[in-house]
Image (tube, rainbow, N blue to C red; front, side, top):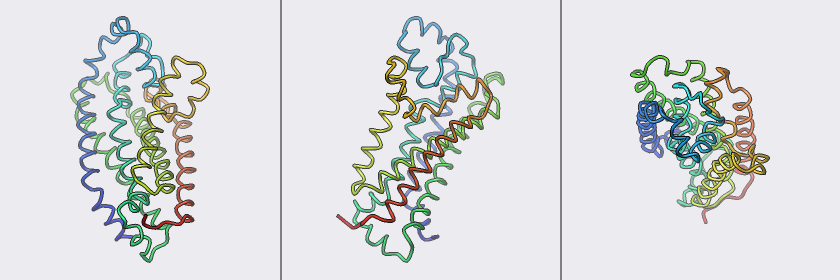
Length: 270
């Protein structure tokens, strides 16, 4: 297993490092700029009414007129750039095995090692979790460094921040588990990435369209963004136990299904 972990480290170390640094820079920049950009948000809503539904879809709640400094920080955690970097790692990492190995023609050698498929799957999972924690941790450090220059009243509470981070990690795990399932069912990495990209795009759009179209509200529970609402966590001060539980439960189902498919299917170089 140590050899497999070393192989994973050598393959993903640079993308993980660059994504972590990129996330830290983006979060630091947004932490400093958002209070200035969103300071006159009420005037923006009056001049550009279509902006409010977009922000409502991202935040998971209507900002209304009580858009406090702390609520502005909630927008940081749902910014499309932040989510794109985190999901990019999910797609990059979880499509490596077995779809990526089949594409590279190396899957026969990998499966010929004296190790069971389940242990291989568990090792890949360990690398995925650890690399995700690293990226999110580095990104959070960028946020902390930038937030030190803000006034104390602009900071969400430590407990609310912890809840948001755990919720974001649950989103990362749910998306990655689905990516593992699709990768284990595919013979081409490009196909697996394409399917996951389409699913994430539809999930994001569904959450937005539900603000305008009543039929979309009935199926909005299918959107991953439905279970990630940092603004609600900041406003209530409560840990998002239900949302985190749903995301982790769905992730467990997807991850287990991916492992079963990987163990049972016939895999060879194509």
